Amino acid sequence: MPHSERPLYLHGLGHFHPEDVIDNAFLESLDIGTNEEWILERVGVRARRTVLPLDYIRQTKNRDPRAAEEAQRHDNVETGRRAALLALERAGIGPGEVGLVIAGGCCPGMCIPAEACRIAAALGIEAPAFDLNSACSSFGAHLHLLAQLGRPLGDPARPYVLVVSPENTTRVVDYSDRSTAVLWGDATSAAVLSAEVPSRLRVTHTTLASSPVGAGAVTIPRHGHFAQDGSAVQRFAIKTTLGCLEPLLPVARARVGETGGTLRFVGHQANLLMLESVTRRAGISEAQHWHNIVMHGNTGAAGAPTVLSQHWDELRAGDVVLVVVVGSGLTWSSLALEVDA
Image 1 (tube, rainbow, N blue to C red):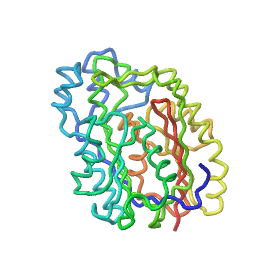
Image 2: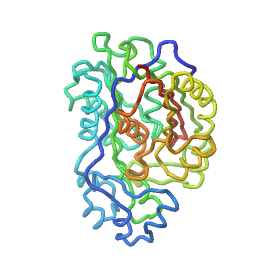
Image 3: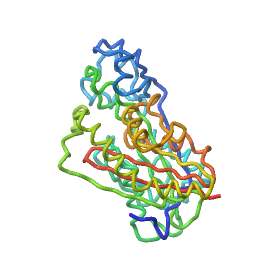
């Protein structure tokens, strides 16, 4: 989608990371053939958060993901509620002003009802609510859909949309498999948007694309563990992220040259080495690259928006933020956000 004549406005972002920390020393203690050096060389992750008690992981290695549903400290509804409250507070609105709720990510807690309906109920929101799951690219898919919808979005009397990605994916990780145990952390993101009410952040560009021939490359079965073709997915992520960035960079660099702002890049938080390869090739400096992969791991669809939420107070007039997310499907999405005075 080219720059929109009627942009989507971003009013607030929120995030939630659960309390329990899976650091590399904990993973080494599981005796699965891994250590800090091995992990850092491959994915660059030092720590992750989880909704699962550490004793549960230590004792069971999550052999049966169905048991994780009983063991979890927080479910998707609770983490979604907490992230949403921060986003609503930053937007300066209450739940009663939300006219539409969309949720989605990699690992919904239930088949039905929609996770959006359950989160809306927890917040006391009476409005249309539905799920749009596009794996790790869900945040991009949500914004792309909103950018395409006719106006107004939802209820004209309640012109705000709440978008939530609850990603408590450690529930489906096999902690006896070192190749996947080192990757995942839990996080939830939330965003408040509107097509009618202006704000200082404008979503000026969105894309969404898929290559279904790669549908089997990254999977989570209904009652099984996460699995992927790691090397193939990493190559795909690097190539696709660069392909999305390259057409956006000249326009973004020209804008910050005019405004005196700063260019920022936020990628899918899957692998630090992948992200560093992208930024090197794209000529993006370390200072321009925002990420949280090192201390939070791969948090699926919540990864890029939680990075933005953590840097919410650092956004300045004239800044441009480019976001590229990739995921199972195979799917990918790019976003451009411009910050006004």
